[in-house]
Each structure stands twice: as structure tokens, then as C-alpha cells.
Length: 236
Image (cartoon, rainbow, N blue to C red):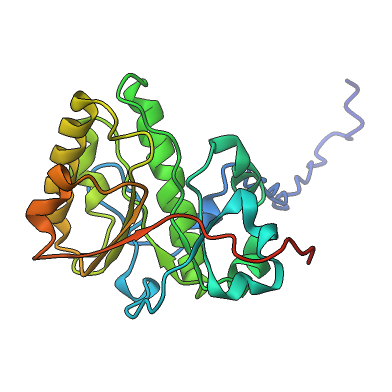
């Protein structure tokens, strides 16, 4: 490279700051802006003010079937007790569904599949997606009811620290209480969350086998619910 400077001439260097390139938020960090976090995994903590205190009549519709109730959506809590791929669109574009969820009575947290034979990192990822989306919509003043679903025992404690105590929670029992082995696991799960969270209300989406729930019926308020589709389908 030629040096065109004359003898004794100084080169002046510009120190203008380069504009920082804005990084696209592909990881959706905005979902948990403003959150307090759990001590281990830093899950966003669901605040008690986000959860409805008075439930009234509870009617639930899965996200995959909300159009079945059309303009009556304001009577329903939208839940995600359906195949994960049915509500993948919500995670892909959370902002798209704000208006819909505001029209509903509220939402029940996201029931991402968490299996004991999954790698632990994947269990935690699924649990994190549930809590992140629940927190996000709660911050937008959409009433949210946390859905309790964690993985192996080691993932339980920190997850439950993200859930407000003495509030309303939801649990699903579909596909979880068929065999004796499944019932035993569910019995342990129920005992643990009731002890840790001491909930005011427990919404149960699915069966409530007497041999599992009977010891707690006098102490806790359980609301059993299946999806209700009592109106003709209407496009909105």
C-alpha cells in the first residue's frame, strides 16, 4: 500500500464509533423481561397478581379447539392439554395470540411434554418454555393459571419456586393414571405439590381417581374439568 504522506506530515485517524449491530432476539428473551428468577435455573417467577383469585364457573377449551366456541370464548379458559405440535405456533409467534387470549377468560399454562426418559436438559427446556410464556402473558394482564408439570425429582424444587403459593394451579391427569405404576407416580406428584404450594384451588383436567385424591378432598378445593364445546362452531 502506497504511503502518500510528505516528510513530517502526520496521518489523522478517525475514532468514530461504529454503530452496534442490533442482534435479533431469536431466543425470545423479551418473554421474561422484568421477571424475578428462581435461584438455580433462573426460571421466571409467576407473580400472584397474575393469577385469578375468584374463578367462578370454570369452563375450559383446548387451544386446538377454541374456534369451536367462537364468540363465546370469553366464557372459557384456554388450555394447552393437547399435543405439543398443536400449540407450537404460540411459541413461534407469541405476540400473534395476545388479542385472542385477552378475549378469553384467561389461559392455563403450557403443557409441554416432559418425560422422565428425556435428557434432563430437554426437560428443563420444556419447563422453561411453559413458565416463560405463562409469565409473558401474565405481564400483559391476561389472567394465567400456572400448569404444574416438571420432570424427574431433581427438576422439581426449582420449578415450584416459580409458582405462587396459596393460589390457583392446574394439573392434567389424562394419560397419567391408567396403570398402578402411573397411579403411584401421580399420587407422589400430587402429595408433593400440595405440600409445597398449599394451593387455594386445584383445577384437574381429566380423571380424579378416588384412591389418589380422596385423602385431600377435605383440605383442598378441587375443580374437575373437561373441555366443554357446547356451542355450534363459529368462525371469528
